Length: 226
Image (cartoon, rainbow, N blue to C red; front, side):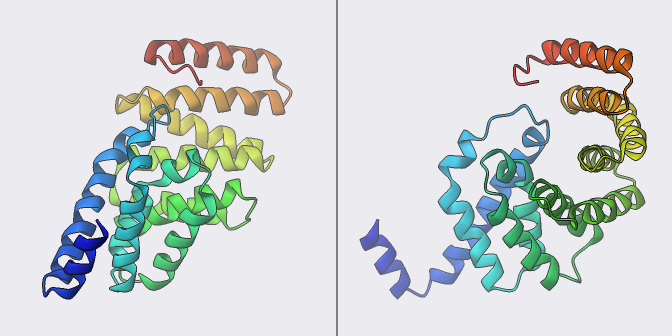
């Protein structure tokens, strides 16, 4: 491997190879993204390619391709979260958001969603505003699924902040939309968090009802974590 890399560095093909490598692993991350967004998937296949994903992110960043960094790091939102690489994910995303002012709204929305999600879990007050901005961009684009997913993430953040009224409204709307588009995985977590909100508001009957509904939904999709 070291010999091959040494010879490649000496060749005129190196930049083309690096571009092809980065493009390949951007496609890998984007193919994995729908499964990751279900919150019930496993990340081991991506874990095996972490070095390649980092190399791709680094190449895009060095080339000034902030849009590609947002697409790749944003696609890995749940991967960063599940593996505890919150700071690393945020670092890629925040640098790209700062540099990528011209990125399409859909790409910027993905980056804001991932950055906001990770920032919230690190106790950073910027998390919720980023999530709200992401939600607004997805809604303006007419992307029902991503709008609902962003609204779910925002609802969880509002719940953790103790803003139960806003959390209840956002989570309920997210669950309704997700059901309408045929999602079952995130619906399970939406119901679970609606139960937490109800508990926080002192409505124990509603908390139990949401908890039972979430458990039944989790059993349907085979999600042992939920």
